[in-house]
Amino acid sequence: MKFELNPTLRHFKTSFLFICLVTAGQSYAATEGNADQSILLNNPQAPSPDTYYTTHPIPTPDPATTQQQSWLDFIPNLIDSTPTFLPPESNNPIVPSTAETENSTWTDQQQQGVRNWVDRTANKIDSWFGTPDPNKPAEATLRILLDNYYDEHNGYEIKPRIRGKIKLPTLQRKISVVFGDDSLDNELKDNVAISNENPSSQTDKSFDRKRTRDDNSSIALRWSELSKKLPFDVDADLGIRSGDDIYLRLKASKDWTLNNDFYAHAEQIYRYGIDSKNYWRTNLELSHMRPNQAMLSNQFYLTISDRQEDDFTWDNRFFRQHQFFQGNRFNYGLYTGGYDNGSNLRLNSWGPFVSWRQPVWREWFFVQGDLNYFNDDRLDRDHYFSTVLRLEALF
Image 1: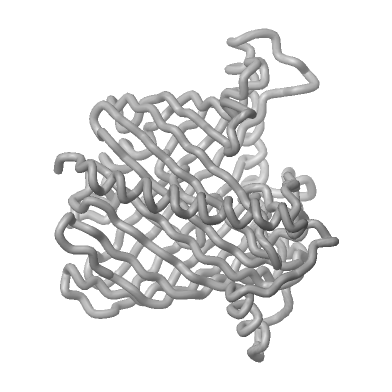
Image 2: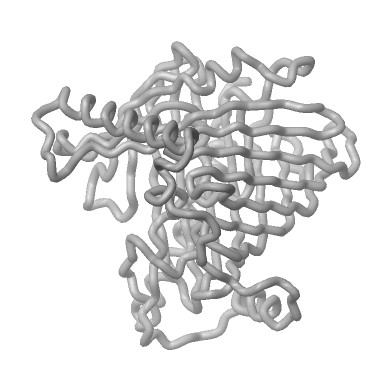
């Protein structure tokens, strides 16, 4: 499919309109004294699922802010007024810390060994660019995931995934090495569902070895915080993916504090690869968060790619999120998704979903299960159940 200009313009209009509306609202609130532009880098009251998944910095409004009701407030107020049988929100741990267990068993020792190896490798790479500062050692994170998909139409698929990041403090500019499945970086940091941008191309096999190898072979240099003069954060990646696809990737993001415990986040991603050509993705999130209260959120994604058959596809998830203990995340909500192929803009799929995530046995090992009940109008499929099970180890 040739890359069309019109869908791109529609894509920019959607992103630009959202940013303009929220920025205008924020400017008005600041003028009236109803908003504080400060952002906390670590907000202990934010309902993040775990320390690794610390979401984008949560802006905290001024306590002296005069609360003004708007139509958005009726939604959380209505939900708060309904009776519930769910336990209260909590951040109490249910598994021991890594420091307490790192020498307890053979598995803990292996996890510690991999973690130490990752840190040594990070410092070795950092030393290539100069003399490391012992007070500012290189940092590295590593995720190893095993996603399992099943539904009655597509059968079973298993997808190993890996994603790592090495920060290099020796270099003056904030440069990191990122490697593994780069599609994980296209998602919001607190993405509510397990997604798969690159499904198996072999319908007769549960494990696509070639697809797995190509998806996890990405490596790139990342420049962060390119300019402090810009009103948003910008990252730039230069690397290679899928074996021989040299690419450049730009990502711009911004957070806004709104009235009455509402927060907005927007991301615009553009990637151009020699083989994959143009890829655009917009992530928009509007959340309502209060201390010790369940979160209400809406996440919207818009994707344009030369590799997909439609001009653009969109997905939206409106959900409630609870945290019953540290590292836990319980979500339930409604999904809608569709596409535009140039002549037909349509809702293709919708339905409820439930997701549960928690640490198991150790704070570095997580299990997440998603249960969906969606239809597929394009394939003439009525609503059917699908499940996803993710096993994830953090190093």
